[in-house]
Amino acid sequence: VVVRNLKDTLTSLHFFRGEPKDGWDGNEHGPGSFRRFIDLEDCPNAYGDSFHWIKASAEAVEAVGSDRVLVVYYEALKANVRAQLRRINDFLGLPPLTDAKSRAIADACSASKMRSETGGRFKYAIRKGSVGDWVNYLNDERWKELDQVFDDSLGGIDLAEPLRFFQQKEIPGMPLIPWQDCDLETDRRTWSPYLCVSLREGMVVPDPDIVHTNNAIKRILSSTFRLLSFSSKTPVDLDENGSDGSPRYHLFLAPSDPWASPILAAMKLLGLESKISVDISDGQSGAGWAFLNGASCAPWKGREGPFWLYEAYQLADPLCTTKILVPVLWDTVTERIVSNDSWEILKLLSTSSGSVTEIDDRSLFPEELKPMIEAMFSDYIGPLIDDVITAGLEYFRNDQNETERLQKGRINAYTKLLHLDSLLGTTRYLLGDTVTIVDLYFSAFLFQFDACYLDAFAFRGSDGFGEPILSGSCYPNLTAYARDMFQLLKPFVHFESFGEVFRIGPSIALTRQSCSSGGKSMDTLRESATATVPNLRDIIVFLEQPARESN
Image: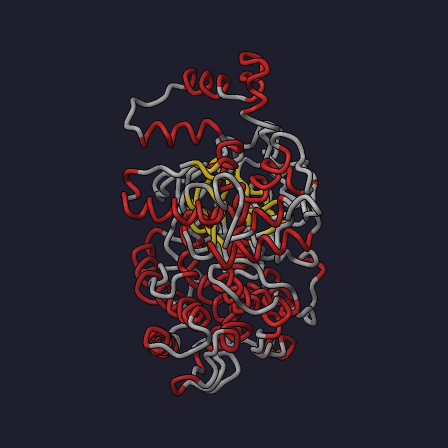
């Protein structure tokens, strides 16, 4: 099954054998090609309406079985024909394609080649063969009308979802200003919500974990995309440079993500700031994490306009199926993702050559503590953070209603917090008197809990829990620990970007309504961001109070 975005399909049909007498919108000669195209009741086109064709194709694929049908998207074919050839070849069960054969097939199937070898006959098979020509015709109101027909008739149909991204004139929900220009008064709740997306076989689609309520949300911290398996016995050589002399390895981070500050702090403490280059995302968008000023590393360095993190995932593996997560450690030489797992990246930095801290010349991941560090993370810190974040997502994707999974997640989180508070009553840091990567990781989460999750994810006052971690009375030892750690992480914690978390609720609502018929207007969705943003200055002042000297 070959599918093309419907706006280019309409444009191609309009011009295919000469522009029709009734034009786009109709006249005395007929209803016009636009009206005919979106007429779902009585489409007069020779092959019926394209919307029903896609729906019928999806039903046929389901009936026959996805293992017996391959759906090829024209836009994906144009973007990376050799990757799609590999996909077709694998589906047919043929021997692996050699590079030479793949190049030969791609060349033979190109529009220019077919034009030169078929003469005038080819003009009846293809007009331009380009992607996105539709933007040159009609106005935004007409295309919005088609978008609404698309949502009403094809929303929630998996086969149609990649078309949604191909049919966008601009990426919706882009950050309004760069992250450096945000201050503590910047209210990101007023920004347009974005479509929550992931990659499916290399194509941007609505995130299925958001769209389908019955799906159990996958563990947030698990590495969904690791092309180079990390092993502390074979660390990456961070002293290597790229061909232009810049660092070989590059980090993509987001200041609204709690893992940015521990990674930046580790780089500083380990003396790695000159060995790894960094780009900071300005926020989420309808294409995932966006970098308004582009990327500063190869191969995108010098390209004008924004960069989206999905581009790195696509380049690393054109057919990948994954969430578009930060952080990402990027290899500019091999053009591959080393890891998108924050915990693994912290370990990698801590085991690189010459990585000793400025504190006491000790590693953040010392050999003698590795088993205990791993156990603390896997038994408590990782599951705690998963419980909080998945509970928040569960809350929003169920229209802010209480569910059993939500209540269970909250209770599990509170239980772990009480255990950690008790532990920190007997020791300064999680594993004694030495700061390790698990302390960087956990304390960054604590800062963000009070500033974001407590209210954005409706934890405040829920299930018997009524106070913040930092300024409340329930967790006195966590409070003292957080103040202590803030002295170390303060330069790397960007409270001004934490408001990005408050965009999650309206964006989940937008994603779910886009994949179904009807829904609220964009203004209404923005207004649905009702969670109260706490006074960030108060939280910062509280954290800056003198830390405890010892236990």
